[in-house]
Image 1 (cartoon, rainbow, N blue to C red):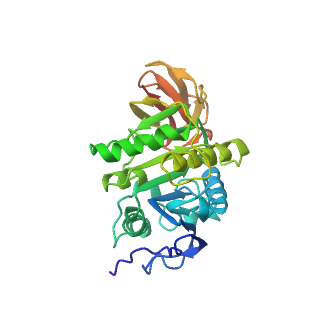
Image 2 (image 1 turned 60 degrees about the vertical axis):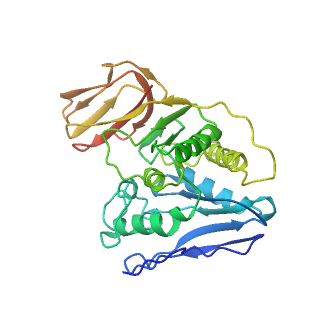
Image 3 (image 1 turned 90 degrees about the vertical axis):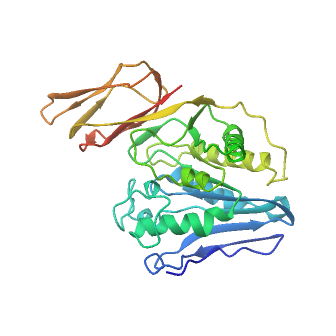
Length: 323
């Protein structure tokens, strides 16, 4: 299979472009992905911003579109590319978590494969044809249609001091209270930001928004956070970066899943401080009989909860950030 490089056409120095691109892969080529690209008149870093890898996390998508539209070449040093929607197959289907082409979670299959499923191929081409060509990467997320969520940022430690330092610089510049390190425990690997970091590209994710809603405060949090990162890194010269309080760093992020199919009677909310062994809720059956008690694995803070009570066996319930 021929691997296409740089599928996003970049404008000349001092110019801005927008439009749609696709990948040189017969399985992917029926879709086109939106993008904005700005190349400043002065040299500088190369930054790629993505959103919508989960198609119903609308806060990130709307923020990325807003950021792409407001960028002006005269204020940019280097190159900024914004891809507002990665899960193109799932967007108009209003899919929660997965890609309808093959039922896979696009953010669990990286680094992907050039000859695998639709999601495998997409992950492979996005990482190898796009992301590795940049000096920094950031992925915008939100609470999906069935998730309440506390804003936070996350990066993964690679052991490469330069990559980790730059990722932490982005994390500290976004402007929220909480940050996590690494992929969530109890969850499949294969996240985009972790794969980028392993390939030497400093990368983070930012979470803002809840329940698939487009709320202005959550959208603007993403916009302000990204703009401050760009200014901190020297990509934007329109104004100085604002001073932000570094987030409280959590040592891990525990995701809890149900051992049973049933109804989740959740007893905590996001931002609640919980103790080890504390009851967070119950799984009950359709007659209300208790199936299991859901307890916190450690002392920490509730970063998100699943708001739909209908839970399949193995289904996700909530996430606890552990100091």
